Length: 451
Image 1 (cartoon, rainbow, N blue to C red):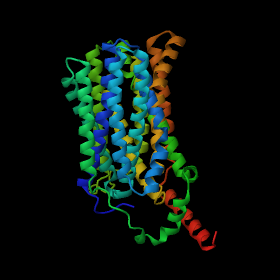
Image 2 (cartoon, rainbow, N blue to C red):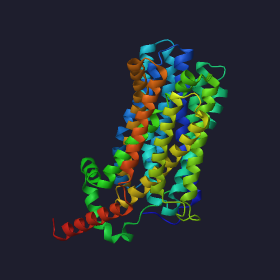
Image 3 (cartoon, one colour):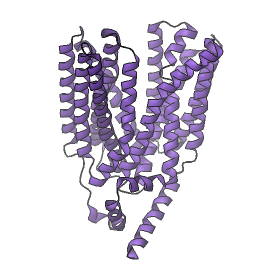
Image 4 (cartoon, rainbow, N blue to C red):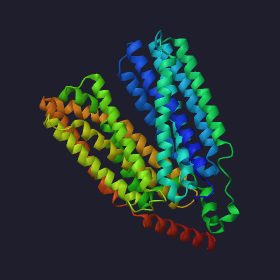
């Protein structure tokens, strides 16, 4: 249940924690990736597998969320997750250095390191979203989601720039020092941001929910997950998260190669094209934040409307990429910006909807619900890059021609966005509340009958 005292100061503190999380992750997924491939001349498949593995480990997110629900506090899970993440980051840097002399042992240590990174992201990220779902008032959810995610992106950008300068010229000793320093700084910032952030819940203030709370205390993880999965809204939203994020992530690894192969862009131009896409995402996020603010008060459409509309417009923009594959005259840069705006709009609207559904599904299960949706997102991101590149290779093998192959892949992505929009239209704000009411009534009746 949201609390009025949880204002923008508290939201910014959560954003700083998310920025710290992103700072550690970006070094392991980009800087170490480059060192393995360029400085150490290792196969690009190795860092690709490690990144995919850290997504696979995040399938434990529901269990992490259940742990936060069981303890009724998210703070220990966020702090513990950040410490595990920082440890994994330092170990990953050490593993990369070790690969220079002992490639096999270094790779095994890297796999263990990326396991810790996945566990740390799961514990911290899931609990952070669960706390937002519990504490952020409804009218602040879309702006709060935008604030937290923008701060995470800032964490990516600032860390990448600073770390890039600190380790240039590259040496193993500098890499280890920078990695250890980054983990220590992020852990310290997280601890300061968490200080007094989460107030304990007063059980006496929720007498109507006491019977449900007692039942939840006795449940194990399997029972709690089954209970969440029986909610049709939770199931529908899980499918939406997986499909939309699969479509979103599938374009990441093929957009720049497409621009180079079909439109003749130079490496610098393709990088700029990616930057235009990110700028569009930022515009879309800010648009949803403005539409969800209390000053506008829904006059620009509900958050759900932005989520559904963002998916439909993403499908339309991806159809535009099909046209750009078939015609050199198509305005590719404008199309990519248009796609970014749609992507940013639906993603932030989806996070705000996620917070609403987690809170409306009944108290005491916010973390489990967030964990389920986080696992769906992790699975989609892990499969998305693989699916996009594999589909591209398959299309090239079947048609043996660049334009038709890329057009087929973008057409597949457009279809996935359209399916996501269709799934999102099935979500209705009142359905979750009715499900929660029926569940609480049933629990109270069972409690009264002595069962």
